[in-house]
Amino acid sequence: EETSAIRDAYGRNLFGQGCLLARRLVERHVPFVEVTLGYSQASPIGWDTHGQNFQNVQRLSEILDPAWGTLMDDLRQRDLIDTTTIIWMGEFGRTPRINQGQGRDHYPNAWTTVLAGGGIRGGTVFGRTSADGTTVEDPRPISVPDFLATAMQALGIDHTNQNMSNVGRPIPLTDRTAQPIREVLA
Image (cartoon, rainbow, N blue to C red; front, side, top):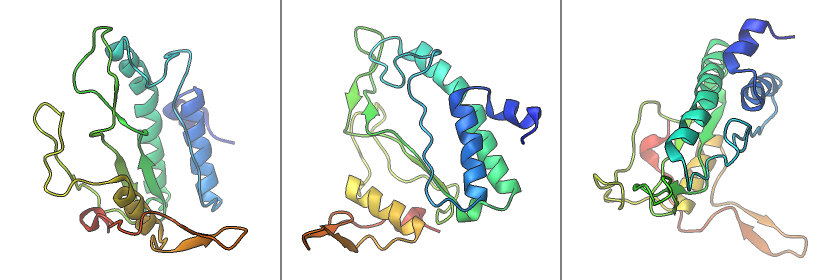
């Protein structure tokens, strides 16, 4: 039901059409949608760029950029951006230095995530690494539980809640010490 122009704007690839489908699902009030950009013919190793980092990231970015940008524009134009929380991230960062194979290795010490839309204060940058990207220099380093608490707060979920297992065991949504990053929340 979409025009050729809008399908082209998202990109005629699995990720681009996945972002278009995500917009359509959000329009129909589906509460959680995930779109993944991993392995593709353009980049068979996905974001796991242990080798040929620059070529692979360029290819992946050529898929990511138009789809994500069009999704954000579409949500804005349809007055859905303020009720849709967007989280863009991987599970860890990549080394700041290039390895022998001209790639980057796994690096859990520091990485970037992007939060946008509902519940998020736009245009905010939070956190800082050293100039060479090897260490977190922000006075308040953000832990994974803090990040999860922030995402939950943006989604309207109380991060201090817990679920009960089928045998009555409490399962916290995140670590009890987690603190949402108030500076990025709307």
